[in-house]
Amino acid sequence: MEHKTDFHEARSRGHAWQARFFAAMASRRCKVLRCAKQDAERELGYEALHAAVKARRFHLVECGDQYVIICDSNQVRVHH
Image (cartoon, rainbow, N blue to C red; front, side, top):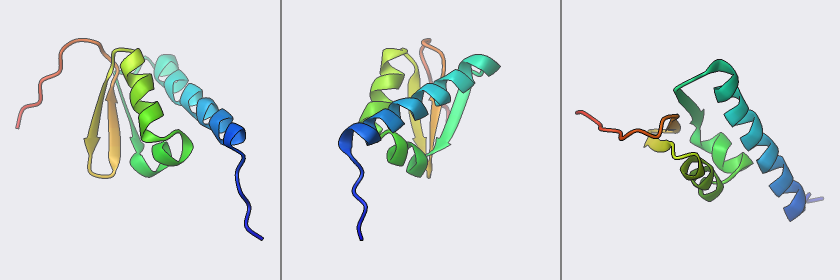
C-alpha cells in the first residue's frame, strides 16, 4: 500500500526542520551552515529554504551536492 503524506503534515515537518536548522546556527554562533541538497529539498524544498535565507538577509550558495548558507548580511564576493 502506498503511503501519501498529507500536505499540512509535510509542511509542518518542513517548518520544524527549518527551525532546528537555523537554531543550530544561532546556538553555535555559526557564520556558515551547510546541508545536503537532498536533505533540504526533502524536508523543506528549495523555494522555502531560499525564502528563509532571504528573509534573514543571508546568502545561499550551491556547491555540488551541498547548500552553503553564509549567515551574514554583508556583501559576499567569491574569488576563483
